Length: 332
Image 1 (tube, rainbow, N blue to C red):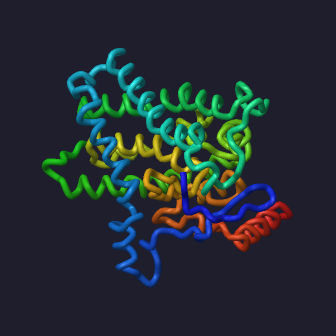
Image 2: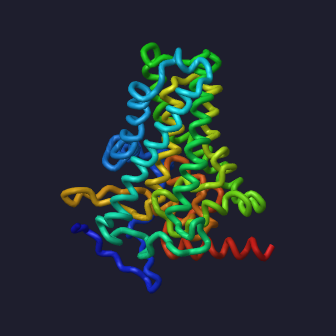
Image 3: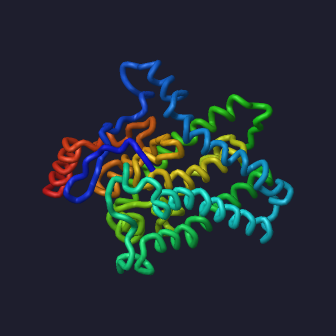
């Protein structure tokens, strides 16, 4: 497939995009209203192309793929198994689509790929000596069951009026604003648990499973130790306190389930049909897997890594500064 890729790789085969990583302009000072509006409603932006897609999935899930509230008032094997199977199928379809196009079909080769390496095979560092098989194992055996457990309990609590409920029909503006805030809330939660996960013992026995993936692929995103999955999906607990609709809770959990495929794609751009190129925002998190000591959060609204001194914008100067900070800490 023809692309606009003209980048040069270093001797190791690594490539970095020409664009310097920047945060959304929402908190920029002095305020830049037009830049904020372009970020919100432009292309690419907050809603387009990815925001609308990820918001639409829980709406479809709630209307057509979720049992009735009356059914979920008691824990019954039937509807619980349905939730687990539904989530498994969704993961395999959505994450599998990324993997199929980029890593099976190799539709764009290594164009816009951060490294020329492909997922490891016959490597004893991975379960079954295969990186993708290890990733699939943790995704299917741990990620989906734990995510589904959070969902089952949350939906059961909504069905029994144990959680503060708000109706879309009665409070459409509130519900829409909350829907838009969920990715921001997730950014804050993810940064917090991610920094905790890099604490010595927790990293060694838990988070190291995820970091076994230095050269990432879409299924690497959910390849985590079960303890980390418990932390990762705990963000949905905010809906146990803040008045919400079940769609909000579904969006929160599904956003956590599906966006890691994008942020671990290993590619800065995905080339669609007719040569249309869509940015993945993958490079920010790819640098974390490559260097470990930077970019713990995301490149959205909150510049948390800038505030806490762990930001790497992808340039050589920023990487050198990161290394200096690391060695200075090691010498203390």
